[in-house]
Length: 171
Image 1 (tube, rainbow, N blue to C red):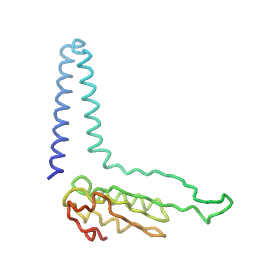
Image 2: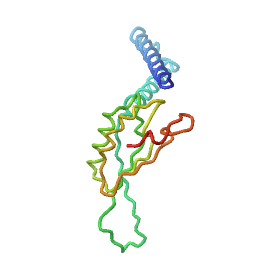
Image 3: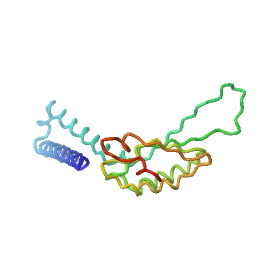
Image 4: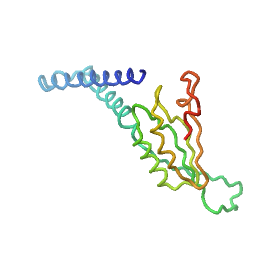
């Protein structure tokens, strides 16, 4: 239910936003520069930017898979040599539910495995919503790393308020 209210709020905001922008554009084409007062220009700019931010944050950014690389030198003594660099993939915030499905998780697993990490750490927030489709997490079984795959639950996965049992997440 909360996700439906959130969806309605997003769609409502974007509808009002596009209506205001449309009215402004019609008035601009009808009256030309007369409508370009400072207040009208600021309102138009605000609506254009805020609508773009809401649209990007709701529909584009959640579907992106971002890989960031960071090198950390853990050697205490610079003369110590390691046989090879250790590569760790830290992954979090899948948030499967009404907005992200199995195909997103499959895409993420393919990307992670293509990096060929020595170890994979899953840092939680697998689920979103009151009744997430846990079957959408099944592609995580295909993660592979020589030193293992380790996971913990996040705050979206288990809380006393949603009554979920950590065993619900066993893969």
